[in-house]
Image 1 (spheres, rainbow, N blue to C red):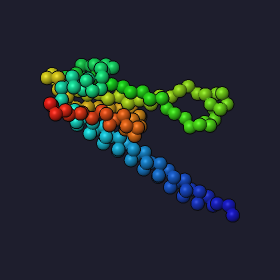
Image 2: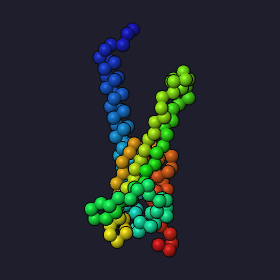
Image 3: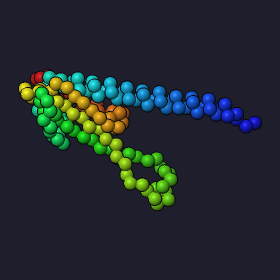
Image 4: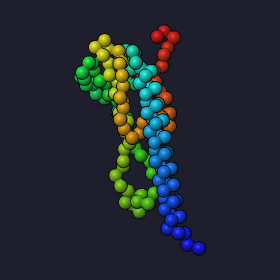
Length: 140
């Protein structure tokens, strides 16, 4: 028996709702994780960040201080048997990114952070973001 158009519409609506909910959940998790990372650095000297994260890719003068910027680029993976590759028509590699920016005041201590990108959540899932939170030593 054929599926009615009304049933197909309901299925499509449910599927779209699920995708929207999943996307929103990931964005919320990502935002929360990144905010916790930035909060862990508030008040810390920028030299501690550099020691843990490595040198920033860029340094910018901003109102009230200096912004230190780190950018991660992650090649996106395609599953095995991904059509164009099998046909020898591989499209150009795409890259996901995450840009982290910590702002230090004139005293050299971190006051806030900002982030942009489409791969911060992916980094968190593979464990890279776990290493971004400030590690407090016994001497600190």
